[in-house]
Image (cartoon, rainbow, N blue to C red; front, side, top):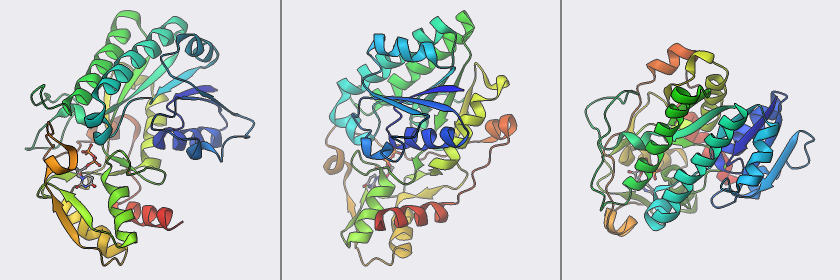
Length: 319
Ligand code: UDP
């Protein structure tokens, strides 16, 4: 099958490209290298079933030609990373909204099946329970610019479901919960690569806020398998699925765990949010998925525990 991955030179996209090539697919990647990097796909360049274009998904002509020849589209191209979103809100909104608009319009023109990669961020600030797909969203003030990311991705989801409803476009939405693994950089704020790199270098491990906020981390290989499973599942069309893990940990405990597993002597330091992100920031105190729905749909169960994940990332950074 011919498959297009937007954002295919990104951290998740490059792992997906690898897996699809293993499956025998013809893989086409488009990426503007804003947060992606050629380094992520350098081992795939030269593979006879791998093709890549360095361009924006907002280049309609280019996208038209690519979508015309592909059977399926994984739409991963987006502005991601809390730090990037805080620093460049305009780019975040434009890329996420306009980019998805182009992808879905052209997918509809050729009636190509699409998977939209969305995010757990859209749930906002819940604390009481694990997040299920039909939960309400609790978002902060418009003055807190972090929420621009959640709003832009929410609009993408609405658009995808509208295409399904009104145009019968086969489309599925996947909400990813803190995907981690090799090739993810700490450059845009992601916590695990930052902690592991600091621990290995003996530099302070910087916990933002009081560290009681929790997250559930999912290994990129598990996420990629889940996305492929959803794409292959006709019953998933027109619906939304969490992709995540049941293991929840506070950021403070994560710092301790990384320090221990990497035999590091780094101190753990607590940094106020304003210092880490500047003004206009609000964190999510808890983020953990209910994965019952995807388990029922495709028999998904993450294979990597948090310890496995940290081990893999330590090995990756040790080179
Ligand atoms: N965080 C941290 N130190 C870092 C980077 C992030 O303590 O160097 C915190 C961040 O404030 C958040 C959590 O770790 O509470 C996860 O951050 P990340 O940016 O990885 O993902 P998020 O879940 O916020 O999208």
